[in-house]
Amino acid sequence: MADTYWIGVDLGGTKILAGLFDEQFRLLARVKQSTTPEQGAEAVVARIVQTVDKVIAEAKVEPSA
Image (cartoon, rainbow, N blue to C red; front, top):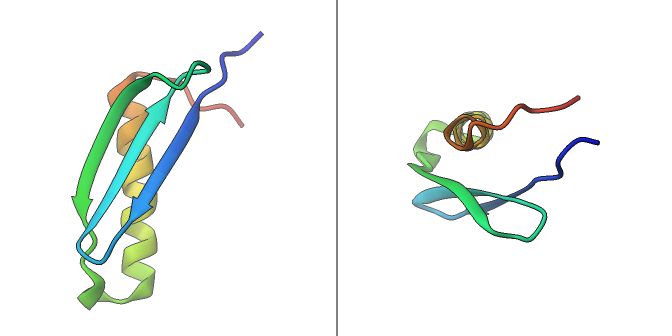
């Protein structure tokens, strides 16, 4: 049976904060990056994806399909 993880993302005007949690909602890793809204919506979405990828790597968790 695979482990279950949760990712939370806080998107603000100046920062993106992502946290990865285990099944008991214990924080395993967190990553913070600037939002850079002046680069446009597509860039912000790309930064969100990048932040989520980084938090998964930081926690050393294998993403599943």
